[in-house]
Structure formats: structure tokens, C-alpha cells
Length: 401
Image 1: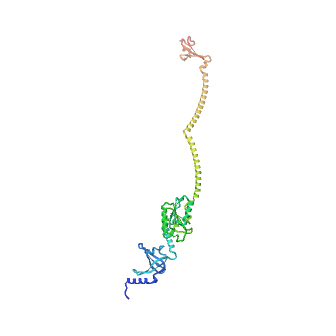
Image 2 (image 1 turned 90 degrees about the horizontal axis):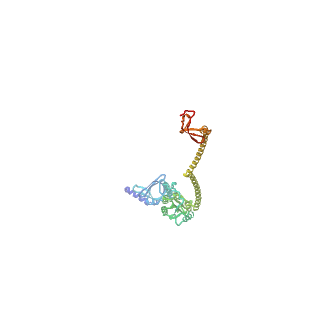
């Protein structure tokens, strides 16, 4: 037997493995361990293990990109591949060409992983939900242009809210190109200045609705600058787009009803508000009129003319009081004067004259003593009525001058 080098041995074993028809296509069930994916090449390296053993596995980039889910450690899988030898290390491995979750479908697992990823990013957080505009001016509809859902929404919008502007953004709602088509339509509606976007389609199978389970549509809905109402399928259908949207409607028709108010209700509300406004205005006008009248009364009381009239009335009253006081004062003192005059007249020399006496004056001085007179003096004699001038010719009872 010839002596082989390590390289020769590994090459020989590898050729044997390639020639063994039983190892060209194998199916292996196990649990993923030590999973890594090369950043540059995209190849996946991992181990498949059970309770007692493990085997290395590799899945090249071309096959890995076709997987609808992301492999993770601890995941139970069923793989298809061939047994090969990694000649450099002399270890055999499974070169995996296909992989399926064991116990759950690949699509279901991919959906579960996508939902978990979006949840971590906050796509389903209620804090990001925005209220719908009360009276949107422009309404965008993202759906199939040929679908019955569009006609249902247009009919309801025209009946309930004819004052709104409705613009349709056609999109593919199923098929491989649908996620990108829907995403582009949502972004265009947001860029066109729509106040709200209605997104959806009629019912269908899970495969038909798969576009609304995509991460692309979820990103477009989450990034929309305006609220999005999602109405995909029937009431029992549920997809990721519904969870990301600001509001989920059970059907496209319900979405149209939830997105806009009813014009009849608006008119009734407007009429009621008009009546209330009229009543409030009447009450306000009455209150203002009362306040104005009160202000006028206060202003009238404080006006210069009113103050002057008031002062004149006060002055007239004071004048009357003063005149009455003067009258009483004069009457009182007149009475006193008359009384005093009577007493004075009783002792007045003039009163004596009426009894026949006379007053004799010399040089305007009362002559009291005859001895103070001389012959020839001129005397003024005041009688009770009138004055007499006389000359002294004789003096008796006194010394002769």
C-alpha cells in the first residue's frame, strides 16, 4: 500500500463522498448552533446538532438569499444538501442547498421574525399613532385601480363628504412587485399634500395579501407624513400594515366611513352651533347694552354740567338758608333795638321837650348854669318842635357878667 500525503488522503476521501449516491442528496433534521454569516461573502456557517452529535454545515450566498426567514441559533430545521469534505481541515460537512423550519412554515416563521423586528423598532407602539384629521381637505387612496374596493371607497366618500378632494394613487396589490408599488404610492400621496391616506384592497388568500405583510410597506406607512388608514381584506384578515397604520379599518368601505365625517351630521351640527351662537350673541348684546346704560348713568352723574347743576342747587339752598338766617337775625335785633330805643326814648332829653321843656345851647354846648352866660350871648333854644335863637338880655339866679 502506498504512503499518502494528507492532501492526497483528503482528496481521496472527498472523491469517495462525491461518488456515493446516498450522500449526494441528504435530508437532515436538527438544531442550529454556532450560526454565523460572513459580512462580505454572504455565506452562512453553522452546525446542526441533536442530543448526541453535531455536524458542520455551510450554505452559500446564492442559496441563503432565497430563504424567506433568517436562521437563528436554537432553531429546529430540516435541511437538504450533500455531504462534502472540507479538504483543508479534513472534516466533512453538509453543503446545504435548502432549509425549512421544522414544525412551522418558512413563510410563517419569516412573518414572525419580521413582526418581532418591527416591534423592536417601535413600529407598533401606540405612541406613534396619530389622530385622523377632523375635516381633511385632500384624501389619498392607495389601492388597485381596477378593484371593487376603490369603487366602494369613492362612492362612500362622495356621499358622506362631497366637499373633500379625492385622489387615487394606483398600485399593484399582489405579486412580487406589489410591496414596492404600494410603498411608492404611499410616499407619492404624502408628497402631494394629502391630509390622510386610505390604503387597502379587497379580500383574498394569505398569499394574495402578502404584500401588506412586507417590511417595505411597513416602512412606508410608518414614515408617512400624514395618518394612514389600513383596510386590507375582510374583517377577519390581519396583516403587519394594519398594525403599523394609525388606524385599522375592517374593510375598505369602513375605512372611507372612518376617514371623513358625514356631511349631514356636519350640517346639523353647524345649524345647532349657529343657533347657539345667535343666542350667545343676543345675551352678549343685552349685557353690553345694560353695561352701556349703566356707564352712561355713571358718566351723567360725573359730568361737569351735572356737577354744576348740583352745585347750583346746593348754592341756592345755602342762599335760602343764609337769607332766612339773616332775616331771623335782623328781626331778632330789630326787636331788641326797638326795645332799647323805647327805653332810651323814655330817658331822652327830647322826650322831656314834649313835656314843655327846652334845651339851651351856646356855641353848640348845652348851657347848664345861668352864671356861665353873659348878656348879649346868642343862645339856641331847642324846643319839642324846632329851634329858636335868642340873645341874653338879663341873667338871674347867677352872677352877672
